Length: 128
Image (cartoon, rainbow, N blue to C red):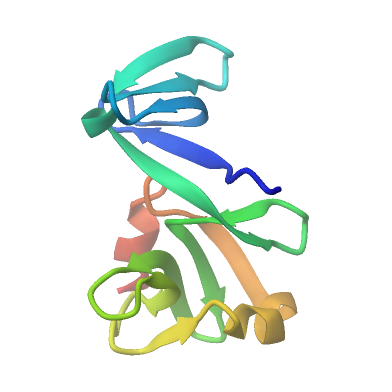
């Protein structure tokens, strides 16, 4: 059984953290920062990022908010919940130009992973 991996973007501290506990019923998340400090955060004060089940060439998991370039386009991994209810790669400059996650299997060796929209929001601005 695969247990999904989560990270949390701490909105107040502006840091990416590992998640070791989620208490939906109590409304908090247990997070661990890079310096191994442990915090409990109100679930409304973090953005939860889930491992989408695929890995980058270097073995790191792909997660919601990851940004990559393919050819001249910049894409961001998002959860599309209006119509599709799945993760997609959305073109930053043209949201109607999106790709399914399965597309990454075909082009995975030809993409350059450049960051995450939470820790590197400037990458979305630079792409426009």
